[in-house]
Length: 279
Image 1: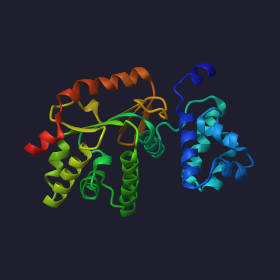
Image 2 (image 1 turned 30 degrees about the vertical axis):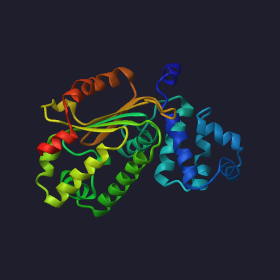
Image 3 (image 1 turned 60 degrees about the vertical axis):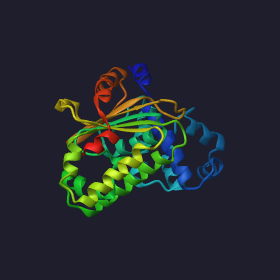
């Protein structure tokens, strides 16, 4: 049983090593600086960040103190490290906050990304007006802090995608319902959002299409992350969610089933530039 678990796609190690490197860089520390701070060699830190060896769960607290990790990230790092030490799968697969962190890593490192949203414009393509008006209505949550935090997180993720210098291929497939909702907004919000989609559609490696065909409810929102031409990507996975939970799915046969939707629907969808002309 343990041998079978260890052969599963290694999402846990990818999360640990990438989050460690991100935290170290954010703190402005070299590998030697961090090693000195926790009593380890720079070769040890380098090995953890390259994924040659696991980050021990016993070192997470010291790493968190040295790099200024949030208590939330520290907790997730410890859970993943403990699971890997026991040879178990990631224990927090259906945790929406953990999955959001993992998606941010996916957008920074995976080379082939597909995002399908049936009723809203995907997060990286949203303007502030769309977020605070259309998304706010869809969430049915009144907390200002919730939406302020959500906008900061979206902005950070979008900047990561925009700043990538490798050969990123990212496809956005948007259901026509998103534009029907947009038409209910003031003209200022509409034009700002449409203009921003124009900007995004012209970025190298980015492509936006609109699906006007009907689709089955079971084919709801999901995202596919593949290695593409990236040398820093982790194992391929699908992200999907329902009302109260979300999942990272690394199973190759299940990924292939989701990819069938992309292969069949993407060619039938309308390029955003053409769709806007008829909007």
